[in-house]
Image 1 (spheres, one colour):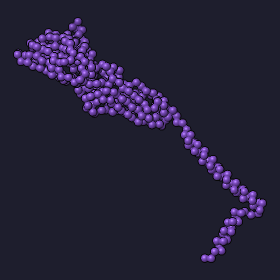
Image 2 (tube, one colour; image 1 turned 180 degrees about the vertical axis):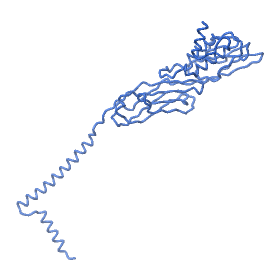
Image 3 (cartoon, rainbow, N blue to C red; image 1 turned 45 degrees about the vertical axis):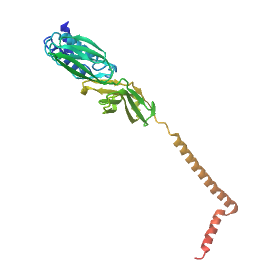
Image 4 (cartoon, rainbow, N blue to C red; image 1 turned 60 degrees about the vertical axis):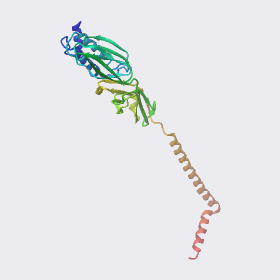
Length: 324
């Protein structure tokens, strides 16, 4: 049984855990791997939002480390002091003393906790329903001196939903439309990257830098022009929260795909109507002019002179007769 556990730990990355090594050292390696190892937490677009990147794997690894390394009397490493926990989730806390025979080894917190495993030098707790930043105190007495260790827990709100909206579901080629991606109630915004995709092509991405600790909606908009090939691809939005600089991991969430119907541009009937009206007006003016010309010609044929031309000639003669 122990051989199988050692093999399992080696597959998870704890290579030197044996019954001769420190149990807390093995546990610390396991917890560190569960919090930040890309091998244990591969980047996957299918990671469910309710699963913390250091939830189930960290529990399994911690149990294997404890069972593998029971019975050690060496001084244990105290483990990380800063932890990232998803809102409403649980966290494994390894409360380890700095001496081999401590007394009054307890974890002080108002949160619900369960003792999972214990040895003379350490105790492993599971703390439930962490909904805000907490400070946990691990206290113990060594050689009559009370000591304590502080665990600072920072709560983050992972992207549980990614909502993609297209301003139009059907557009003509060359028409401007807007893509909006909304990630509700996430924190911290710092380190959150929102990427707009057309198929596998990146249209736009934005990394937030705000440091507000409370949940906020992250909104990204992008204006683009419709092309014929847009109708052959799905539009989607990806949200990635990078907590590695804070001791966490990567959290992914992808929106449901959206389809855009792209149509050929329709003729502008208003311009066509205006062109027809202009042509008809020109024809009307031409018709009136021709009617006038032919009526004058007809009058000339009947009377032998053109009244208009005669009036023009009289006007010219009167102008010439005026003295200078």
